Length: 455
Image (cartoon, rainbow, N blue to C red):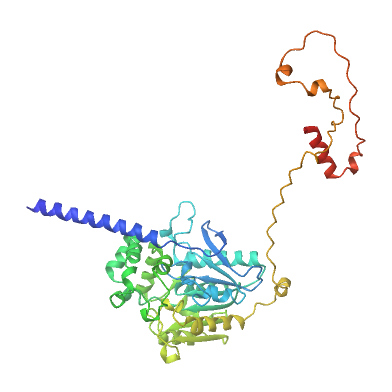
């Protein structure tokens, strides 16, 4: 009896596993990633990882460069979905002449690990020490600009803090952080213990379960607390593919480090050389900090307290909620694609970047936009000449005279051996044209001469 029950249970588990695998394949096929950039490259970091970087700009644009860095368990589609000038921040700034760049950090599905490494070996320190500097240097080298504007969402904004405090922000002209905490005290409260354990044991399974739950997330949003999105703030044209393609699997190393910071109550990076609680007030890069009222990671009140700790004067706080004049309360993720984000978030971000132009400006910056090179027109096919237009046959220089007998010979006669007879007298050959010197012969006459030989 016990064996029979165990067999039935095992069979049910196998069927459930097969159904889940089939559902996963169908969902992946229905939600392909659409890369809307035709300028894609892979930047190699100092420790030999390769990161996908995409560029978005108007044809011939010489605008100032802007780098977009995504958050945890996400990729560059964090800033690219939904499509449209008012749908995402990248296209919003591209339409205003900026040279926009997006990156997939080393834990995303497009990253190519260094030999002997895995995405699960990566840490937050690797993001800040290797990925961000490598991409910034690549952008400056390709564009010719000396510095770059930086926009980071969630963990991407945290990396801005880490890079600035570690390097002094040497490659940054201005920065925008969106829903970016400086500690992770709430991580243990927001992530259930079973899910934490699953992330450490089987990161791919945890990521796949999250993606498989997306079709139900909109309908049952009140019961899906692990998605930090205000369902009322989602654009109507934002579909399942937009969410599916912006999610990536968690990384064991990154999450282990974040959970460790949550347990310790303090963020320490670079082997103890950077303590956020001590260094945060000394940020150097002009900063616009954006926070959402319903953000479970850092809400508006906590964001204001963080903002007040920064000592520099060139800073700005943007709160997104009804109490701050917005049409709706924002949560964590919808800061990047809310219903009214174009007016309430994207517009202020563009104004902040415009207020911090990169100086000195390179010589090419004020030139008119480059016009794209015209496509070469196909060469017209030569017209078929009639018999009346064919040129008179002219033997090539040094060739023997052709006789009428030779010209009228059939293939059989040419193949037969010549009998030992007395050679007939040659007839008078047709008079030759007087050829022009080789140096001054036009191309057309040379071609005609060659056609004559073939004829």
